[in-house]
Image 1 (cartoon, one colour):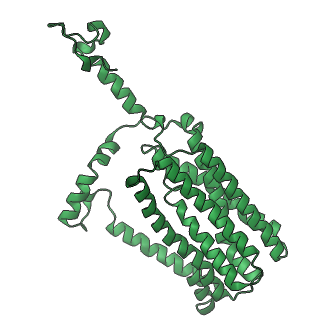
Image 2 (cartoon, rainbow, N blue to C red):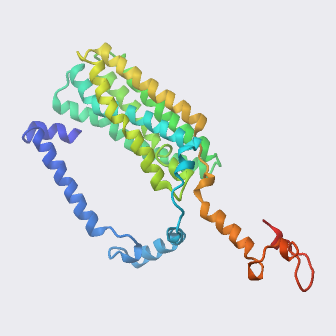
Length: 321
């Protein structure tokens, strides 16, 4: 946002924004194609030590990807309470985020009458702080789980609550600060900063629920949540026909309640535990190994419920189901 404001003023208007960021995207793509690889052993840009370290630490993941997982259990995913809670939380988060990010420059212009350069710079401050707080909160979450033995479920819910209530209070404080530019900017910046706590909570919760189907789950949750981004701009346009402070206050109260209510639902339905439908193949393999523990694949009960054929001695390891 900060760069966009400068580009619009000093480098040919709105068209320069699209040209510059389009070129940045193409440059990133070229770097990705040059340096990225699917496997550490295929990379030509790693030292021997780095390659060996990655191969050793990722070995279990490679074995995991070689498994032929059963088809995605869509039915169990669709009826899973933690998944439904996660989707609802994502909808609330995206609604609040899109409302603030998309329409904050408009609020700065309509209510506070900032210039386009100042608007771009000040609108970028909340996002900068959110990025920094995301990094800090990630470290705190890891510390609480690994060192303090806090449950994953509780930590995810705690930090999502911070990421939902904090921004809501921030935007409300801004709307009641009148035309005090400093107070409004500080309220927006601090409020959006707390939204960074969604990264080590909402954003990674799909990995908690299902490591095997995390990609599918994240795409599902993110896709449904992003639909709220199509509603937010339209709703803001309807609620602020004249761009007055009172109209914007209604917008911010709406965003606050949406984030608050969806967060409460997540606190009741959410979880940080692996779901039972995550590893259907493992359950089948265990049953197959148990059934095939005796010669010729005979079942344990048919061979004397774990007694050796030649000695008749009891073998507890064979009767464990």
